[in-house]
Amino acid sequence: MSDILYKAINEVQIAQYAFCRFITANDTGKNGSHQAGFYIPKCAAPLLFESVGVKGENKDKLVEVKWQDNFTTNSRFIYYGQGTRNEYRITRFGKNFPFFEEDNVGDLLIIAKQNETYYSGFVLQTDQDIEDFLNYFNLSPDMTNQLINIKQTNASEKLLDLYITELVSTYNDFPETKKMAQLAREIYNKSNKITDIDICINPDLQLLKWIDTEYNLFRNFEEKVYAPIYSVPFTNCQELINFSNSILNRRKSRAGKSLEHHLSAIFTINKLEYEEQVITEDNKKPDFIFPNGESYHNICFPTDQLVFLGVKTTCKDRWRQILNEANRIETKYLFTLQQGISKNQLKEMKHEHIKLVVPTSYIKFFNNEFQSEIETLNSFINIVKTKQNNKFIHPI
Image (cartoon, rainbow, N blue to C red; front, side, top):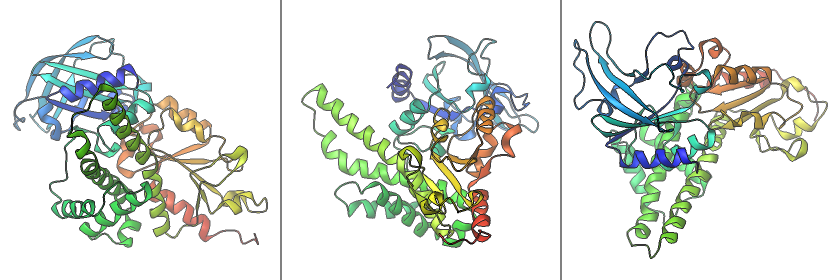
């Protein structure tokens, strides 16, 4: 665990309120936006003010924010309520603020309120730090851009909560990872009356709902399995550390495969031909090959009918890992839940023939110049369907 990550976790744990979100091209001004500072959604208003803003009035306050490298900014929290505006922002970071650069797009911003006028701020820049932070607080990437609450539950979805409670009561231990993902899909679909047709119509939305449901389900399993352990005092510090590490390792293990399991379910429902973990050159194992490994290794099978999809929850650093995973396929698709990547990284990806695939609602977080080149999950599925429906017929 890096020093910055360690400090961020500690500050969030002792904060009155804490908030995280991915930095976007709009924040850095690289999309031509003239808005100042960081936008804060209305659901996170308690982070900034004791009472919500009143439409028709502006209000602000000055605070001190101590950032990760022990520098401070005398920043301004403001609610714009006059005219057509109705939004919250954090402004006044100074000319030398280091986190408004192009390469900061896709970094994770964390703001923690320690008291009314003093805050802690962090910007996590590596995939490992970002994923470890989200895993620590058991957050999916779709749970960012809101207040952090480790006890958060989906109170508005009472039926789903009931299904989760009933399901957890039937187990004495964690289901294995693939089963956990399946159970999350089943209870979400049941409580919301989701059909295969719904999933085919809007796979992007359903994927995010499944992911959020699984995080909620997993939290409930954690409470059941771990409560008898943490309710008894540990005999020494090392026991506590070992217990904590076992929790974090389980979270990482589950989160690392969860996304692939849900994507696989969507591809199956859409009747796509695919194979997971095909062994290619140098014993590499791509996440998905369409239609299958046999076709990939058949030199007579048309290369333009092969499709590669890598899967990385975050990919600011890790996207290069897929470059040599399937040498026959020049253009490689990469699905990610990363909310924004710097323009320089996007240029590098384009040069290396990598095309991003993200949930529809995430495209707005990327630089305007590249948004038209990013595929949604739905458009990616249609690309594969088109190839498979018009595939070259050749005996394999």
